[in-house]
Amino acid sequence: MSLRQWLLAGALIVGGCATTGGVSDSDVARLPVAAREQIMTAHKSIEVAQANLDGAKLARDEAKQFHHIAVAELDSSKSRLEAARGSVDLDAQSRDDRALRQASRAENDARAQLVAARAKLDYANRLVELREAKIAEAEANLAAARADVELEKARIAQRNGIARDLNVNKLASQRQDCAERLAEQRAHVADLEGETAQLKTAWDDRRTEVNRTASRGSEIYAPREPEEVPMPTMKWRHDVRGDVNDTPSAPDKSQSEAPRNNIAPPP
Image (cartoon, rainbow, N blue to C red):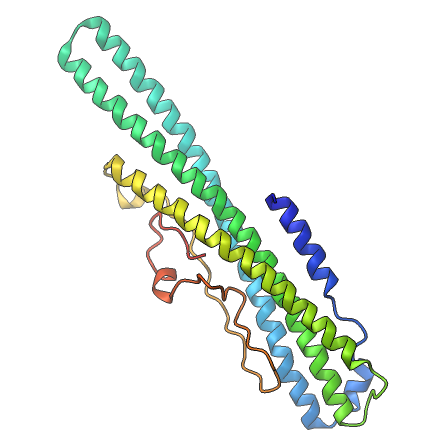
């Protein structure tokens, strides 16, 4: 499935688990103060999920900037190789063995740089795809958080003798749908994280082979993963679910805090 197809499917999925038929604001206003405070606490999970969605969008934008740089570097590498080949041809005609050896070494270096630039672009392409998938994951997480809150509001209201005709089973079913959709999105992100890590490793290997020196100030950094806002712990939640980027292959904190020197951001 292409990236566009997956994102469209993700949008339909999130829309399909939208919660309807919840407790009205007027009914919430009739609740005792302690019950309203419980609902306010529950709403914090929605705020956290929204913050993580905003962070995912920022990370996607940074990945796109990195991709633009990778495209430009590939074009530059192609130009250097063409120039190096031209020098080899000229020196071959001049029959200057020393100049020809130097030009040949320069051509080999330029070819290695081109291979590294292509590996970098491959990684950049997949990184953008991963960051887009993380946005879809964050949107699914936000929908799941809203479904959790609506279900809890209904339970609190009915415990206090309000909105007794509300269909709690329907809300519970919608909540389960959202949880399942979120699990699907997380599985897709986990797959992309593995593929992205492999492409990043391939890029690192090509850069090592190039063995060229570059000043630190001119180095192009790969974008870092933004810090995630932890989901609050709620006594009323019956399932254990982590934050938006909690996936089977999520890296530890030391990876996310690594220097931004051309290192793949954590999936």
